[in-house]
Image (tube, rainbow, N blue to C red; front, side):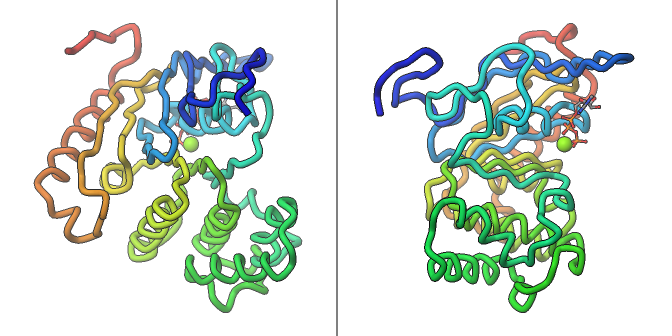
Length: 278
Ligand SMILES: Nc1ncnc2c1ncn2[C@@H]1O[C@H](COP(=O)(O)OP(=O)(O)OP(=O)(O)O)[C@@H](O)[C@H]1O
Ligand SMILES: [Mg+2]
């Protein structure tokens, strides 16, 4: 499909373009300029991590990319098409995982629901769901309901559902915040493996600097609100990542120090104080 229509760009466009997006929340009593001017692009198949202070608008921008919220200014393009509603071929793992699962469905049914919507046959759905359940370590919990599971298990269900769907673009909002350190390491490797296997484009929000450097090809550091991109850091680590070996590399320590320093800066500065550094 290479026909250019208004609101549609060429096939060679990046997987995701966030063009000068601003978002101001307006209620009767308040006006919050959450996102000031966010401008970045993500290549097809890239793994981009986003870090930034709490309240910087990270969830807001993911909701805009997912077509759940309209930007106040600017525009977002996915695969060259302007986002004006929830796109197909996109999956989101929300920060508030508790609210993202259907409580009346079992773990397996939750994972299968989007596959059913995709039109997959029952046997295929069963196979994919079983694989996803095993991959996130939920064997034996397939027939449980979300409210029978711990927070971390619910979050793993949400991850399994997103991964099983095999989207073109995967958005993840602090997906591992509620799981223990060992599970977190396993899930980090699972997401990297899925990313490698499927060539999916990933945008991953995290508070954890080490996690951002370990997972990403690039780390975007956001300023505090009203938000802009404070730094765009390429991660030149070997593609094959390993929890021990990669994290022990001197380059890993350097990158982590750079991101840390930028986040400290991000907590202090806002656009009116922005001084261009070469
Ligand atoms: N629905 C809403 N109505 C009004 N203000 C909102 C709404 N959602 C978010 N905000 C405000 O927008 C700003 C950005 O919120 P957002 O949740 O996007 O930040 P965040 O970077 O995801 O934070 P955290 O790291 O704590 O998850 C905050 O000041 C928040 O209070
Ligand atoms: Mg958030």
